[in-house]
Each structure stands twice: as structure tokens, then as C-alpha cells.
Length: 389
Image: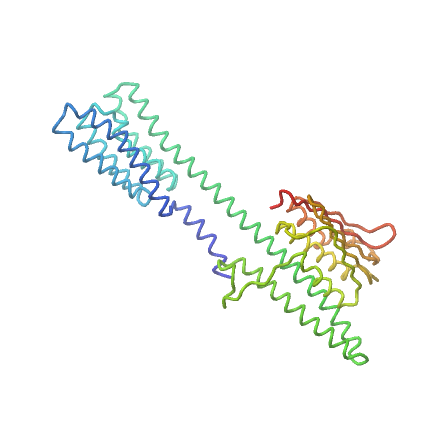
């Protein structure tokens, strides 16, 4: 559990420090090196025609800038300093090359630094890159100064935009992790609440008939054992979502099938073991439903049956109807019990009904629940199939 709780935070911290994957680093290097060689290299070759002895040195410096960019993701500050020095040297050797062009590799490094390092570091780098601005003014006048300053500021701004984009992605990922853990918590609540409710009733029934009908008591105890094993199995599957090895457990054992409408009869059998009469009716083909809809429908039925066992006074019969109509799935659970005095649970103020409504909402559906005029309590959900997550 400690490992699972640390892994997302470690991932976020690594991204915050600007760590790039090997593939992304190589792509960044090839792209930036290609840009420098194409733009600055061409300018140097054109401007160096009249300076034959200076041209080889300038070309070597351009190649050195492209090579140094290999480490811009790992050490952008050092790469920026190196490319700024070599760029100024190229400009000094070949004044026909503009200062903006000579410092192109430094501007690329500034962009990467702005995207991957803290703002105070990138602001200092921006200020340092603005120091040669008087040289741009001296060689190109006001236009040269404006072009240089705009190019440097644009490189820094693009890096800041990329940094903000990565921050939004991290926030979305963190929010998705939190929401998923909330769903898992609801799963744990549903499993434990339903199974414990059934086990409590079965234990009471076993105690009542322990002496007069020992065989029936043994049957209830066996049902308690089966329910406990099933609940433990589901809890293991749910808690495994916090681990990276979600496909198998530690011993390499294959996961059991998860909650699904295909297991509705098993769910009904656990309630029948308490003495409750459960009628299950299916209409339409429920095979091939989206996993989210299938799970939501199963959990709504499970929670409705649990509420019947807990709160429906005098209930001895409950009917479950699942209707698949192509575009949506309708789930209806109706019991014949009496609402408790005060009616808070039946009116849906408890946690169980809130959870059912939330499950329906998460898949884009709706749920209504309340007492019927002729007596009993009804839970009716409508879950869309198209567009479900």
C-alpha cells in the first residue's frame, strides 16, 4: 500500500523537474539541431564566402552548438551558456550574420530551460540573454534590437506555455487518480455493506434454528462462509487497482471475473439465502455492454437489495428487472416492505442511495427512488449505452 500511494506522487515530481523520456529527448535534439544547422549553418556559409579563413572556424562552432544541444534537456543552463558563448564568437567572426541568428541555438536552449526549470531560473536566463541587446542595436539599429529582443522573449514565452501545458496535464492526471480512488472506495463500501448485511441476517437465522433445525443452520453458516470468501476476493481485486500488476496477484493467479450483470443470479442467491424471495427478470440482450454501464447496473441492484434487507420492514419479496433496449439499460428493483418510521432511509437520504445516484450519473444516466402508493419501495435507473465511458 505504501508503494501504491507513493508512485503517482513520484511521477508528478519527476515531471515537475522536467525529466523527459529517452525518445522525447532524442526527438528534441534532432529537431533543434536540424533547425540550427539549417538556419544558422546556411547563414554562416553565405556570410563566410568573403572570409575564407574564418569560415571553417565558424562552421566548427555551429556544429559544436548542434552537438551541445544533445544535453539541453538534462542541463539546459550549461547548454545555454555554452551556446551563447559560441554564438557570440560566430557573430564576432562573421558580422554579416545577425546577432539573432548567431544566438539561435542559445534561444532554443532558453526555450527548453523555460519549460523545464523553475520560473526564477528561467527569468534569470532571460535577463542574461537580453544583455547582448546593445550589440544588436549597434549592428542593426532599432530594427535589429527589436528583432533580437522579440526573438528572445518569444523563446522564453513558448517555454512558459509548454510548462503551463505540462502542469495542466499533471493536474488532470492527478484528478483522474483521485476520482478513480474515490470510485474504488465506493466499490469497497458496496461490497462490504451488501455482504455484511447478508451475513448478519444469515447469522441471526442460524441462531434461531440452531437447535430445532440444525441442517438449516448449517446451510446458513455455509452461506456466510461463501459470502465472506466472495467479499474477500472482490476486495483483493479492487485493492489491486493500487498496484501496477493489475493482471495477476502476487502468485501469478489469474483474476476472477468482476461484478457484472452476468452474475446477477449469484447476487440473487445470496439474498435468497436469508429467506427473501427474489424474482429476477431480464428483457433484451445485456451482453456486450460497456464495462462502466455493466458495473454500474450491477452495483445499483446490489445496493438496492442491501437497502431492502436493512430498511424495508416486513419485506419478504423483491423483484429485479433488467431491460436492455439498445440505446439504454433500465434497472428496476421493487420490494414489498414498509418504510421505517421517519422514512429517511426509504426516502433516499442515506449513503447507499447517494452512491447509487452517483453511479448512474457517472455513466450519464439517471436514478429515481421512493415509496410506491400501493406500498413497497422502488429504485429505477436508466443508463445510456451510447457514449458511456
